[in-house]
Length: 544
Image (cartoon, rainbow, N blue to C red; front, side):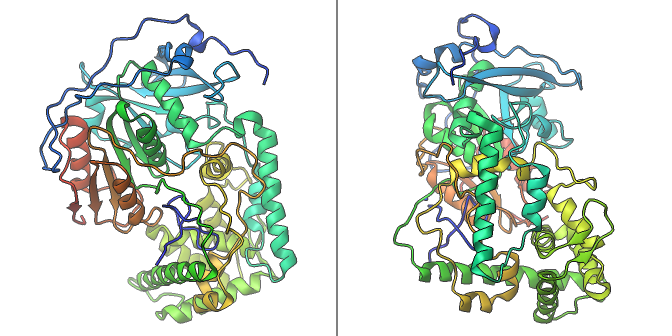
């Protein structure tokens, strides 16, 4: 069966098949061109292509020269100064071209934040990206426990805000009002006119984003970010890019490995987004139905786990029968289509079907939140009070009780990246048949067919839709077997797209493998990044 996905995260209804200025440029960094900086070259010995654990890495291949047309950008050197808000960190910025194909055009300043290595002789710089898309790397590097003590000793850890995010020219692609309307809108309109209204709303959001962000919004795809990374690599004085990317950050790493193959140093891709996009004109309604059945079955199993967990320590307010529990939730959602529930928040006084679907859909992906989700559903079903459901939904999407959303967040920032990286396929109007949706009625309400959020997008699109990287040294690709956000199949697919990669599978059900509580996973990553010892390909880490 063909499994249809979008960007590694399942989009049940409109899945995309993944296998699918007149400004004068500023002087980058405010300096004249410089002589090449002293190179950090990571030490190691030979790597065995057989994948033997303990074989060390040796960087023997020569690297390609920097693009001559971008010489002025590659001539920069990061000027580190103590960050004004936290002197434990160093801050710098590096200038990149808005359009790498037009180096004489406008530029963008990329913000960097460095956590200096605790050793006197670090291996170099390890760039980190937390994914999103839309998440801030400069914020991520400040999170306690983001990386372990061994990595802190071995590397300068550098987070960066990708172009258009946070301190790198960040802007609100979507406004607070846009997001409130989007989460509140009816996800299952009862008429064709309602579906047209959803499509028009999506197009209006895309148009508003492009207007607010201007040329930058139109040039925020991961190909541009990967090209920026190569300039950042040079600016910190490293011959090769050393990189740890999580979730959507794995796509940036995969594109970098494909485009700058000889420059790949140590690279860990954790909980991967499948990098490939294939627009299959031959996709039929039968393919879409098969895909919906597959993910409907997966969703039903997840909901059954939720019901079982709900009744483990107390009588579950939804009962112990998954079908009856699903029926109760369906009845609630159907009633909300016409009569919202009251909620005790000035900024969110009513819970619509859209807000309820947001709460339930996000909550089911996080087993740690299931007791709170069960309580919220109980209050809504038995007392017709949407307050806890409203609270749960707001927490799930990062909304404050005053109605504001954080600036560097998936909700506000992902659209220009998503729409550049995943062109809308020609068959996007195909939706599952009513019969299939009736077989999985709760799934059909929580993940219903919807118009593409990239309807009307006119920004730049990804030019190369397949990744086939052949770096000379092994890339570590790691993921959790039951990751609720990026399915393990995507991690496996990415490992297959990068020659000589080492795949590690962890028996865990959280998103992200490193530094999330599994000692085997931590050891695999740290042996690789600190001791240059890649794990055996196919390593399985047991649950802990």
